[in-house]
Length: 294
Image 1 (spheres, rainbow, N blue to C red):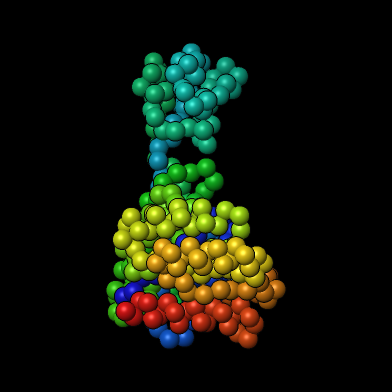
Image 2: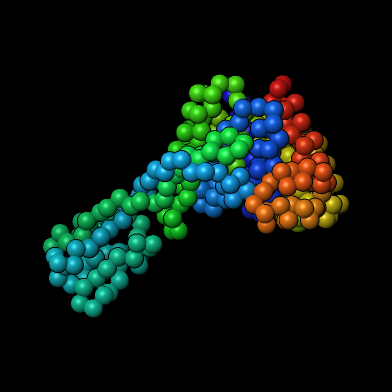
């Protein structure tokens, strides 16, 4: 099994559309398993159009809950809460579950034992099948926590499936940024494909994600999306990569076909393999195969 994770220093660089297009290329030549580790904003399934086979609940942290029958309205919970999570509701009190941090101060301070701490259902994760291979993905509810833990669950399930299949490619659509979900997504990967674009903050964002993947011993490689919208910045990124001894996978030009394909719910190379972006991604995939083959 070879594990490839697609990352970006920030959102909006075309990471998921690139992952979907790489899935089309990989599935044509290998047994493929996919994981969408961007659990806070999962959308790889929009382009792969899988059929959900199984759904599993994901439990997050703890939240306080007030028993209104036991509550006397003394207000002690309101006094001790440091997160503004206890709200007045007439003569009683209630918990704002978004604001609650699960610290249990109110639970311990309530003189009537009217407050209990409950584990929340923070989202769900799924096993699905697509024409390109099995897909493992998830959804976090708004305001919930432990997305790094959910990423680990999704990835471990995908790894288990990859090992079951045998010689395969595990393609992971990682979250943007450098936080805990990114660390969980890139752990154990053979290659981190970093999608960047020639914007003002490109080098800064690229430097942050490079530092992250290198810290965990993952080989980085860079592709430049929408490379022709700012040729000077594109050259700046390329010079940075050469100087820092980073694999340059290639450039993807701005291509209206990408937007058209997304409106149809398809990867660009499944929509039309002859477009400039599709041809560039095909070459990038061959470069990826060369690197992981080494």
